[in-house]
Image 1 (cartoon, rainbow, N blue to C red):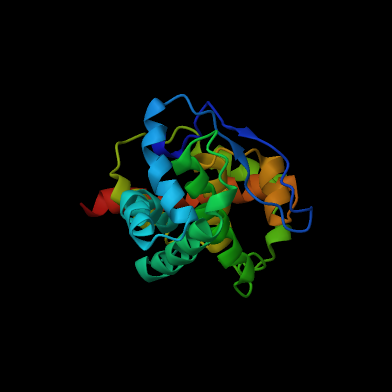
Image 2 (image 1 turned 60 degrees about the horizontal axis):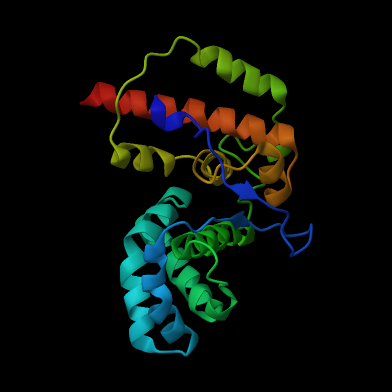
Length: 224
């Protein structure tokens, strides 16, 4: 199933400057599109605190950033709260955008970090999983067992809406690791640094997330 396969190409990820206690997602974006220049007046306006420019940026990127938030949350209301906080941070940090890279990529990075912060603050978000077991309890054997169970699985086409719905049924830990690995294209070491877990835990949670997603999607296919 293509949706459960990590993309082969990854953006360049550098070590965050905020310190090891709270790693941040920092992506290096190469701007090769001259169309990025059309955002310059809006960026100038937002930097000056112009409400119309802020509203236009919000309208331009609301749909894409809402889709990002939906992947990290369990429902639409939670996604809207995170998106609202994300855009507040975007406008507060606008003067820090160096305009050398993708404006959309810069906004996305802030929104993703906002989603991670939300769940880091949530009680037990990373401490407990679905089986009431510590996130540190899963070892490499769990990952190997899941991968073995998935061998030979039949592939099928699924709708994006079905995938998002299934992802929202995952525990926060599974969902977050899956998002960071598959959609943000981070390595397990980078995920471990970002979430304060070990590499084996990241691998296990990714394998478990894929396994549970396939079960949920298979069930959905059979119910059609």
